[in-house]
Amino acid sequence: MGAKGRGRRGHGAGLLTWIVALLLLTLLLAGGAAAAAWWWLQAPMQLRNPTVELSIEAGSSPREVAQAWAQAGVAEDPRLLYQWFRWSGQARQIRAGSYEIHQGATPRELLAKMVRGDEVLEQLRLIEGWNLRQLRAALARAPSLKQQTAGWTEAELMAALGAPGQAAEGRFFPDTYAYSRGVSDLTVLKRAYAAMQRRLDSAWAGRSEGLPLKSPEEALILASIVEKETGAPADRQLVAADFINRLRIGMPLQTDPTVIYGLGEKFDGNLRKRDLQTDTPFNTYTRGGLPPTPIAMPGVASLQAALHPAPSRVLYFVARGDGSSEFSEDLAAHNRAVNKYQRGR
Image (tube, rainbow, N blue to C red; front, side, top):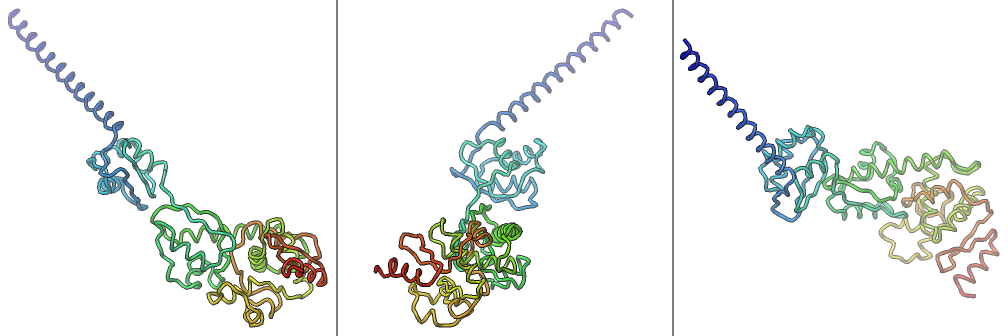
């Protein structure tokens, strides 16, 4: 009995030793795998080019994102990238957008960039005083911007912006707009249109009392004229006062920029007497009141000036030649200013 018991205990001890050894080996292998995974996450990825760019479309799955990086130039197994995305718990937090990585980037940094939405953005600057033709030319030149609206009419454009029947001229706020590579020009235009609407609504709500302007639309038209007529920022409110005073008494605005706008592409840089005498909807020498639409994109300063003109009775102004203007309350004083600054008398 004793001998047999010792045999069974020896056999059990050997089995236990084998199990412990197996567990230790498993732990060592697991630890080795964990260490290898940790090293891989911290190590620079192999890139086929110094810089790899990728635009991630909205709705792309984590697996598709991993495969897209590999196709774009990340020389790593996309299955490993996908498993890392999943294991991190952040796979569903990856944001659509345009991304760029450089030599030295690690898998950890790659995921963090996409989760943060740390995109590579392009910029489009819209300048105060530009007209719609100039705006569309800037859109056409903008890098990595999808030209969705290039062949659209103004009516089609405004319908897409949710403002059918509204004139497109002057409706986009001049500012610098950052955008993701590959987005459409319509996306940028929607932002610029909304920005102008907000600025116009705010300025109209805080306007001075007693202005001869019936609507925000008229304020926008006047602001566009002020934008084109102002050479020196310090003169802006006086320029606005000049036009406001003329509107109050029914005097024609007689402003060259509206005539030039009415000429369109026929304008060769030289405004002639016959141009001032040729009637068009935008000729403020032959027609009273405001033109039918804005003639340019006004900035905030011009919007504010149109709705907060200087308390002045000026009715005339002439360029001094240094960017500023000489303002007069009556025709005799204006004629003297014209002789001095324009004719050198």
